[in-house]
Image 1 (cartoon, rainbow, N blue to C red):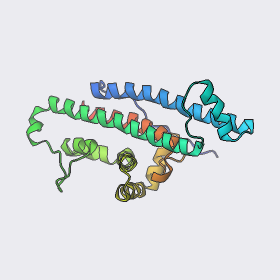
Image 2: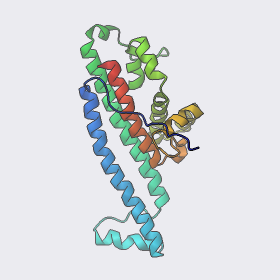
Image 3: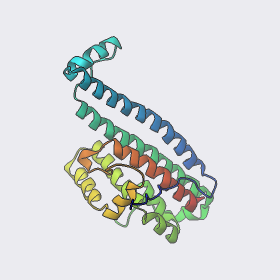
Image 4: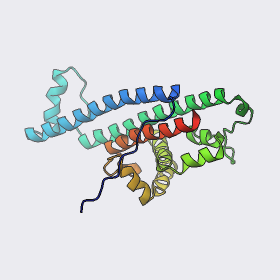
Amino acid sequence: MATKKIPAPKYTTTKKLLPSIKQMRSELGAQDARVQLQELSIQYLFKAAAASGLPIGDFLKPLFQENNISQGTFNFDELRELSSKFYLTGTYALFEKMLRELISDYQLANPSLVANWKKESSKGKKLPPLQELLCNLPPAAARRLKVCSEYKLFEYYRLVRVANSHVKDKTLSSAEKSYKSISPTDFSHFRTYDSSSAPSDPKNISFSDFFLFTRAIKYYSKLLNEECA
């Protein structure tokens, strides 16, 4: 008997979308289109080069020349690795921008909270935007948002972004530690996004990570809207 497929998470909300979330979804959609076209181009060139039987350098050189583009990398594996990291970094930037705007919207709607708004951890370190927001929401709302597998995923991808931007052993080890905290139950949940094997470990980030990240953001933004609107 075939196993019944678990429905993918839904993106619709019962409340009117907050401006910051509505804008982020629009920007994320535009980025999706650009990234997907770039990934399609890479896959097409890879297959065309293989079919030609030419060394990759010989295949690409005339294409660069014919289109008046400076000669780039001849290593497709390196290109795909760098592109995947760039996809992830750009996506996190959009997510973080939305969170900062959402914090501002929430403070405007709840001015009594501003005086005691928490921005630092108990150790005096500046909180990342998502942690800052949840730290200032009503406890029950914060718990509902923290128990989601997506919360762990966002913290992991945040640390991957840091490791990609600041190449130090400590930043990479933080990302690796965060990756290990993602449980088998979390991975099973992420399969509902049809995300292949993502999330990948920090040294093997792929297009599947971008696919999972963008869809997880759309779903989690629905939950944020429900709690903050």
